[in-house]
Image (cartoon, rainbow, N blue to C red; front, side):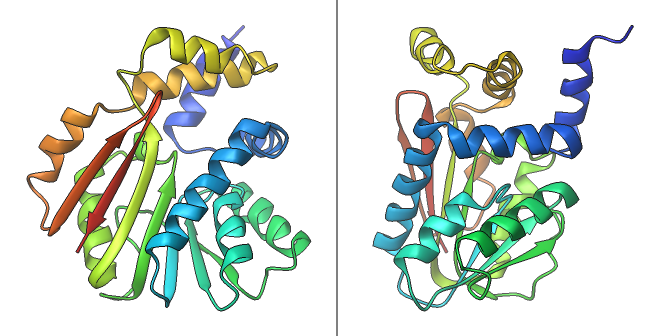
Length: 222
């Protein structure tokens, strides 16, 4: 019999899809800490946003986009998502919150985005960086689709987060599957130093990396 956790690992390496996408969306909806982080990231976006179009890369259930749209009455948000299951979940969530007119979903790969040059005024992503198979290429694509002077905010877990902080966070999660998925995500992540090295090959005019307890926030300005 196949190891269920090995099966999940294979699914995660291909992107969150199917059964795991549904379970993750349920977890993200009911776990209050996650919802708090979505709100916090949305507020940071709002503080830096000057108007126009926002792209959320790998929006999953679209909770970050929903929190942004609640705060910005005239915003247009496009979610670029590779998972068909997540697209359907995100569309349903946007409709439930009455935000379908502000949030649209587009299927696509972040390493080859289906957008014209300088198509957006802001880019945001939460928890997707460690899934990118070609991170340097994704960063190049983010640069390409942003207008000059625009900002990208990238939030993800720290690979070198203190073990006691990771355990403290993980122990609050009831689901064994989600706890395992979380630990796997940390292993697949990056350190701030690795990101700094990666950024040397990009053309961003400004780069700022802020380390937090178990995560980091990367701010890039074109």
